[in-house]
Structures are given as structure tokens and as C-alpha cells.
Amino acid sequence: MIALAAHWMVGSIYSAGVGWAVIPAAGWRPFLLLASLPAWVAAAGTAFLLPESPRHLLVKGKQQAAMQVSEGRGRRPVGQQ
Image (cartoon, rainbow, N blue to C red; front, side):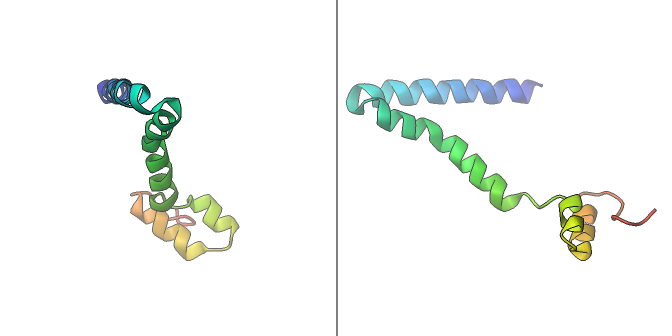
């Protein structure tokens, strides 16, 4: 819980600092671009680094990939009791 609160505080400080530095010099549009960069980086990281769910892989007929993802998460492989 403390880590979540710390991330909120870091984001608030980042946003205020970027706003203070950018808005007087360049206006609100460049500020909006710079303020949204952390969200874009997080979204790109999630899209490329997060594996598909085992259920999605099973629906697509990729049993071997589903087992690999399940094993990588430390769970019992799909289809085994």
C-alpha cells in the first residue's frame, strides 16, 4: 500500500514539475504531450512484455504456449490435475 502511495506522489511531483517548467515557456499543448509520456511508456511496456493469458491461448488452440505461460507463472500447467 505504501508503494502505491509513493507512486502517486512521484506522479504528482512529475506533473507539477513539468507543468511549472513547460507551460510558461511553450504552452499547454507541449505540457500535455510531456505529461502523457509515462502513460504511453507503461502502455507500450504492457503490450509488449505481458504474455497472453493461458485461457486466451487455449481458445486460440495454442495448448503448448498456454502450458508455458502457466508454468512461467508458477502455477500448475493447464489441463493437469
